[in-house]
Amino acid sequence: MPELITPDARFRVSFLDAVHEHIVEDDFFGGTLARELREHGGTWRQPAGFARYVEAVREEESEAGHRPEGFVPNTWYWYVDGDTYLGRIQIRHRLTPYLLDYGGHIGYGVRPAHRRRGHATAMLRDVLPYAQALDLDRVLVTCDSTNIGSRKVIEAGGGEFEDERDGKLRYWIRTGG
Image (tube, rainbow, N blue to C red; front, side, top):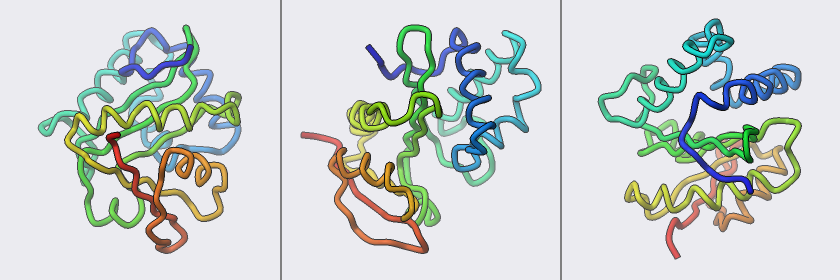
C-alpha cells in the first residue's frame, strides 16, 4: 500500500528511473528537477552521492538549513509503494509574496508512468496532517489554469477556490477536521 515517507536513499534506483521518465516527458517538476540535476545529478548514480542528495533535501526543513537563495524552509515527503518511488510532495513552511501568488504551501508530482491512478489525490490528503503539525491551519495550493488534472486533485482534496492570478488557480485547503 502506498505511503508517504521522508526521503530515503534506499529508493535510489527507483527514483532515478522516475527522473528518466520526467526527462523523457520534458517535465521538470516546476523547475525543481532541473535545479536538482544541476546541483546533484552528476553524483546520483553512486550510492554515496545519492545519499548526500537525500541529506541535502532533508536539510531544507531546518530554518538554518542550506537552501537555494530565497527559498523558505520546506519538508519533502516521498510517496512509495514497497520499493517503488511513485512521486513526491513538498510543504513550504511559510509563504513569501511570490509563493502567495504562484507557488503556495504545497507542491507535488507523480512520476509519469504512475499517473492517473489517484496517487496525487492520496498524497495531498495524506500530507495535510503533517502541514497541521507545522501549525498551518490551512494551506494554499496552486496549479496552472490549464492543468485540469491538478485542479481535480486540489478540489478532491477540499480545495476552496479563491482566485486566478496570471494563469495560476489558487485554492485553500483546511488541514484539520
